[in-house]
Length: 209
Image (tube, rainbow, N blue to C red):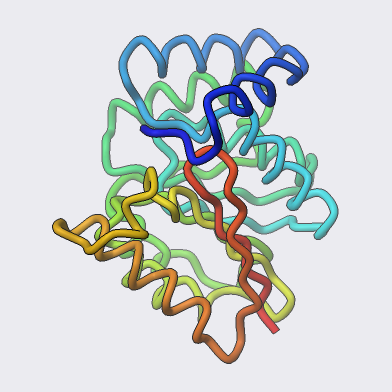
């Protein structure tokens, strides 16, 4: 991934971050060693803050990998939270379950394995916050599924919306085209107020009217 910010600024931001607890630090090491995409601590602190200040209690994650973002969201939402983890890889889900136990959030996380875009249909009700981080070509479909399920004044947060800068160029692949279409959709929506934050690989934060 090519940093959106200059390498010096990226290094500065990550250099001043507080140390993570042993569980999160272990997950970061594991993800780096196995090249597993996680949001990383800088973006994680941002989604933690957004979840906390918005009062989100019912959260659906579309794409959770080993559960790194899940733990941050579960901790922000508190002990009465209802968090839905989704991933298509059963091995990721198994590892995530172990991390949830270590982090003490297992009782507030429901683990669902399969296609997140289909899995959201299996959970009734509205959500206070939906986090999208599925395969990038799926972003438009994920938005179409997520938006009706998000409560009014709820938050839609989406990772990788700048895609190492590739969104600014003519798309040659399905992933880039998917993100470009997603960005067009949220900015043209009559019910979303979006902002793209150029942190790490770009994060879109949208509030539903």
